[in-house]
Image 1: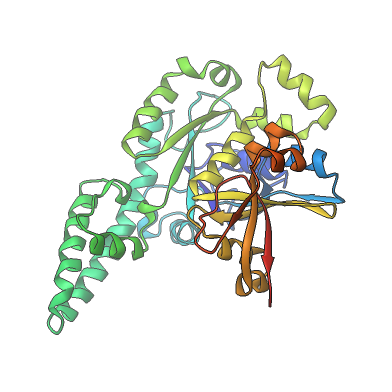
Image 2 (image 1 turned 60 degrees about the horizontal axis):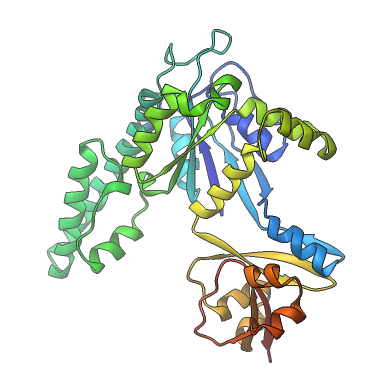
Length: 364
């Protein structure tokens, strides 16, 4: 599953990416420092893995991961091919969700491509280009349906929805805020390749002072209001500070965070929010060989979750033996959890829950 990091040039995208992945992606004070996307795979911070590792003492511990793409900065006219617009839009089309980095600090040292800081204007520039690209896409779909409609009247419901959606976007709204009116419409809407329908997380990049007092940061407050309208979330962060934190050794990181009155790196929240934004949860397998977090979508049933481990597990699925992480943590051992009646046998219709510690039984 891929998260695309987007935004205007010089807002801190590559700095955030560097901190997330420790990949050393180029960051410079000029537009288009990033041309082809930098790609990094990042472990999802999860304290539950620490507990399970301590409990089972395995030879190996494997976390869940998220893939991040650092995409080139967008400028006005990208939908018409300005700057690196065509590449930018193509790379966004390939991701599952978007992290939109928004500059929420003033600086005379770092040039703003639009001259001065204005988060809502910056968001509008990026999202306008995405809307224009979606409108062009919808116009092609509408034309095709009008031709097909002559021979298939059942397509009228889809055509009506497309025309309403086009009108909605033409008023500078995103597809995220569009309302369908039936199951048929929702299914068709879900099949459309719309950039402005992708889930989005706004990351407000601040200087250190602005981050430590983000509740009083006027730039962040305006971003919060916009995110509510878009049915999204906004997270405050100081990308430069996070880059410095992640460069520290583990033993030096904790006292540094305590001095800054932080409980954990802000990046951990970005990663966890990204994971949740993709509609993902983790279940665990645990034993002496390995403790591992497995990534599945919310709503996945037990046989399909077993198939993430091996196709034979799904094909020959018999049952899942499960203890919820919360029960296991509270009781402190598998034996104690069994005594308390927390050990469950689940069949093919069971929908996996986040934190299920699972043993699959199968026969092929």
